Length: 221
Image 1 (cartoon, rainbow, N blue to C red):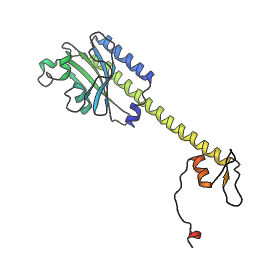
Image 2 (spheres, helix red, strand yellow):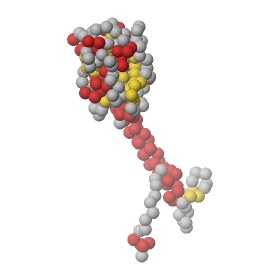
Image 3 (cartoon, helix red, strand yellow):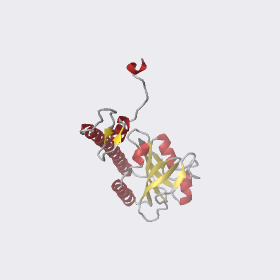
Image 4 (tube, rainbow, N blue to C red):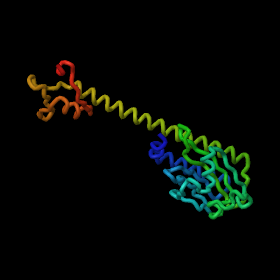
């Protein structure tokens, strides 16, 4: 389910997510607001704020496992991570984002409707930043919005699958309701192009059924 959603995030949803990232960067006054996602063995930048001083761009990716990235911890713990100043924290002072001068971080996990990890929503600053409680509340609201969007994508996908099944069923019924010319001797069926076909070939073509070979009790005698 998760992979299907990932491949079906529509352009209008991504446009909304871009607005969220841009708004976060503007309100908080930081260089980078990101929406990250897991993609196979990698974690990548899906959306990056269009803000001054942002070193990240969509499509940037790193191998996820043992990357040392802030976001790796958020995904694995499925919890919030606040790093006010990585340079003052021995655990974070050598992480890859420090090389980009992103020394403070606040990130929240984003999950699919089945609670498997999608990625993160995060903001980064080039200076020490403890981030206020107001900013944290804002991040939580946007986190909820992103997960609601994923839920809608999933529901739309389910509806699309059900509609396809319904359309296929209707076509099958229509095919079976047709007045079908059948030979009274060999039981072959004539199609709309006046061609003759065996029953199994006709049904396979019209309603996509498949046949297995068995012997009925009468013929087995």
